[in-house]
Amino acid sequence: MTQQKPSSDSLRAILADIAETMAQEPFRGSVADYIPQLARVDPAQFAITLATAEGDVISVGDADTPFSIQSISKVFTLAVALGNQGERLWSRVGREPSGDPFNSIVQLEYEKGLPRNPFINAGAIAVTDSILGQYAPKEALGQILQFIRFVAGQEDIAIDPAVARSEQETGFRNVALANFMRGFGTLQGAPERTLGVYFHHCAIAMTARQLALAGRFLAFDGCLSPGGARVIKARMARQINALMLTCGLYDGSGEFAFRVGLPGKSGVGGGILAVAPGQASIGCWSPGLNALGNSHLASRALELLADRTGWSVF
Ligand code: DON
Image (cartoon, rainbow, N blue to C red; front, side):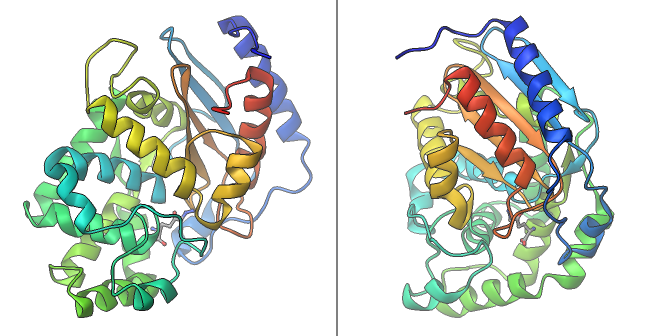
């Protein structure tokens, strides 16, 4: 049965209902504490913004509070790397779900240092390294930030230096992953140089509103609006969405596809970017995480949203 396309008034009502339901949830998950700066965030916060095909931007909750986008940045670095390198990128990183936690190292040894996909930490570090093959660290970061500002249409998006420092001081597992890949030759640059850029792009701060705006190019075939300004090729947008659906929530990707049915990308800051192709880009945030490192309430909220709108891709 096809549901009718929800009007902007009904989307507003749906978001208000979801926010109310989330406010009553007794279990909110726990904030990430392996990056000390993230452990300081108030877990009571919740936000959701829709940027729709009609050009409406509809929000509820703390949609103008910046949070650390963390692994959601991997979507934007992938888009930048694909834009620069095209299909060549796939010699550096695979396209299969890992079924393992985001910071796992086990498959890397079996698979000769080639990471399973661009969204696990090892894969994202390899993608960042591939950008560094062409650009100096400052230029690479500048390119990533410029890309995000352009797709969001917001100039005031920046890196939170305290979060970058916090992760630089404690990111031992990422240091291990980078060195392990360097040993296999699948990381080509100096590990500390690549990690410096990786930690900084993970430390970009955005609001739920900015995140929803930044995801529009994935919802609208590579364009900022249906038939509007083109950011990347339609084929690349489809490929990124496919990877988000299969790998975007790590070992929680199957459950998210089952419950929500939308491409999504999570971050340990509690954000999830979800894409309803042809309908809307969705920025959702609540800092409390489930055991797999994905936002508990944002996952729940997106499940309710997909159910009420009929936006599941299935
Ligand atoms: O590398 C890390 O561990 C963090 N900068 C990002 C991890 C992350 O966001 C995983 N997402 N759910």
